[in-house]
Image 1 (cartoon, rainbow, N blue to C red):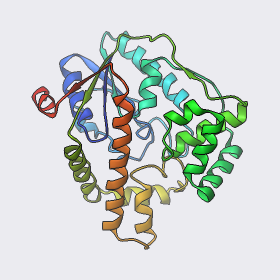
Image 2: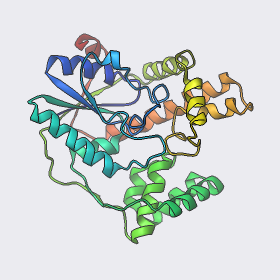
Image 3: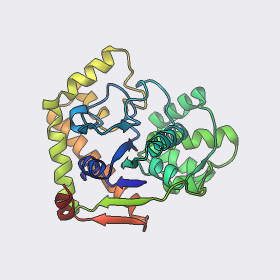
Image 4: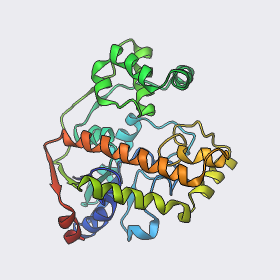
Amino acid sequence: MVILLGPTASGKTGLSIKLAKKFNGEVVSADSRQVYKYMDIGTDKIPVPDRQGIKHYMIDVREPDQVFTMADFQKEATHSIQEILHKAKVPFLVGGTGLYINAIADNYELEPVPPDHALRRELEAELAEKGAEELHKMLAELDPLSASRIHPNNHRFLIRALEINMKTGRPKKDRKGESKYEVFKIGVDWPREELYARINARVDTQIDRGILNEIKTLLAEGYSRDLPSMSGLGYKEYFPYLDGVRTIAECLEDLKQNTRNYAKRQITWFGRDDTIYWISPEELQAMR
């Protein structure tokens, strides 16, 4: 199995199409936001025509108001990978969600703890009242290992880790198992300023691509802005504009800054993995 990983806007998607066509492959998305239907522009899903006939898995597999956990991803992505292998094709796991990638590559032994919606609402209320840093301190006391892996701004994973700890009375256990696959990991290593310029340029296209209409349609369909899917990067930044309290320029700048910060965290995460073969932007262009 080939894993294409790296920070957002690094060129993973385009490279995956090129390599999948060349090596008779199919793509399994490892993006925690692209699992949701109707959320295309804010999550930067690859449009169907751009897939060039390459089958993609783990995209549009949940409604925006449905629960989707890392355990769900591991189970369903593993099934997709087995389907690809059964067809004697090469699976390409492509994305920037480090925990999802590790769950597959390292065969995490995940603890099957069903969601506790009442507890989750309590934690979300506490997050709104006290802030992410306070919840992260709470997690650090209960489960130092998970706290070291989860950034305070990753509210979804932070709350889930606390939920598991408080529900089971013991730390969240994501132990490495024995890998099921021979894995080759490829990452695209952009100079930081060039990557940030690519992020800014991508954000600038969202208005013309229709992000505001996408959000308005989701809200009109009854999907709450408080859902995990809607409160993520690429959606929450536009709510102040829709509420009439900030300009679109201010919201775009917030999204650029938040996306750059997210990319920085991704770079830190993947930088701990010495099994990744990093390619330069020049090599990326040559491979295309």
